[in-house]
Every structure is written in C-alpha cells, then in structure tokens.
Image 1 (cartoon, rainbow, N blue to C red):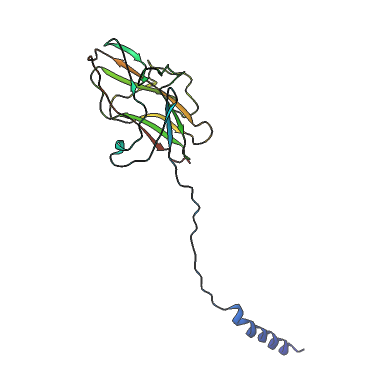
Image 2: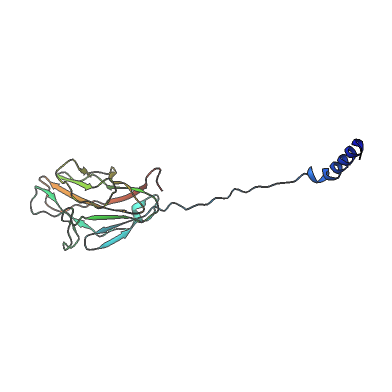
Length: 204
C-alpha cells in the first residue's frame, strides 16, 4: 500500500468515526444532601427521681414549657446562709453535691450549654447562687456554696450552668442551688426559674 493510499484510508476512518466522536449531548445535574437534623433536647431530674423533658418553644415560651415539680427554700430564721432547696412537700431535698437539686442529661445529638434565670429579680433580702461543673464533664463531685464558684442567679439575666455538655459519652451534669436570707420579710414569695439549652458553636 502506498503512502497516499494509507493516508486516504486513515482519512476515511476519521470521516466514518467523526459523527460518533463529536456528537453533542445534553446534561442536567442535581445537588444531593445527606442530613441529620439538629436535635437539641435535655431532661432535668429532681431529688426523688422526677424527670422533665424540655421542648422547643417560641414567643411566650413559658406558657408551653414543661414544668418540673416546685422547689422551696425554707428557713425558720429571717437571716440564714446556704439554705438548700427541697422538692415541694419536703420529703426530697438537696444535700449538696451528693444529692443535687437538678441533674441534667443531654438527650439531643449536639453538644450544648445549659442556662438558668429567674423571670424577675428576687425580693430584697434574698439571694441565690448556682454551683456546677460548668465544664460539662461528668457529675459534680464537690460544690462550693461560699465561694466564687457559686454563680449569682438573682435576676432575669441568663446564668451559664454548664458549657459544652457532650451529646455522647459522659453527657450528665448536676447543679446545686443555695439561698441566703438577710432580714427577709416573713411570708412567701415565688419566682419562675427557667432552664435553657443552646447548641455549642462548632459542635455536633
């Protein structure tokens, strides 16, 4: 076969294959998402084993927020320090770290910080502080009602109870409350205590 014939043969094959090699095509594409929705949830348990599960609310949240049993700070004296709360009825009481007034369990799927606040400032002569790990690692072994580790909880500002409580592994933490009375007026006043969880940024 001459060089010219070979060249013509190659050109023939190219002409035959060209419609196949250079045929146009249309395309479409779809973005596919694989998602696990954020679940922010916790339980709070009081002495005696009564547990309450949080829910998600909006607007006037306190109207639909689940309520725990009531707790009381009782003292026979108008001036007293480090009064520990009891569940209504008086049978189940906090006994410092051994039996805290609140035990929290992260039942969601993201790390969270837990917060407390009263719905209004406390009456004159009454102050309350909350003591907890604040680290979210395990249950509180000791607490310090008379030190800077007991964080003021006297008004409607949110106070952090624990930060970065894991959603897996050791996901429990405790909180103790202490009240101080200073010439408190005789009688009973009441405030609502709110518990709140927020997702820890960058967790999940």
